[in-house]
Image (cartoon, rainbow, N blue to C red; front, top):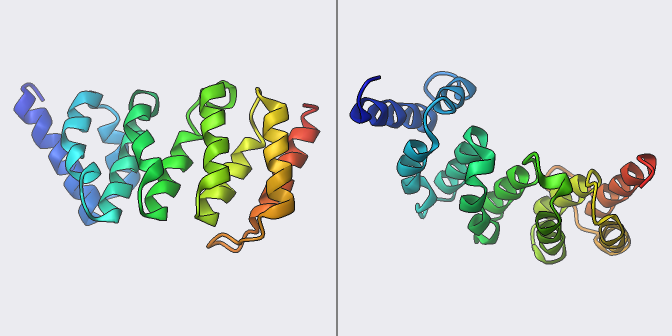
Length: 177
């Protein structure tokens, strides 16, 4: 691929493959990960700005599977998306960024999501990952204790949010925090 037009065409083709289920999803993502992030972002904007929740969810997922650290700020707004599926995928990838377990502002943000999000899927995901943080431990323990004792909803996978919080507390305890 020599020219910008070739790269643009290649990215558009890979995105179309993902959208239409052509080839293996992970192969297309891996190929996108070898393209400059700015080119991907340029072409993924139509997904991020779509009224279709599946396209927004897919856009967030593609950004975070290709260049997660570089695209972190682009997905933050999707944590407030009207659709729980989009919020879930945004928080799923946010809390899997390498620096999450040691980043106090990100951890505090995750705590606020745990306290305010209406979706039990989102809250269960946040509660689980908070069990792996390395800083701000006392605040994390306090919120997980509150969730364990008060959040009785179940995720779409049938997991009790309070039970997920209890397991996260056990994880913290086992690590000697």
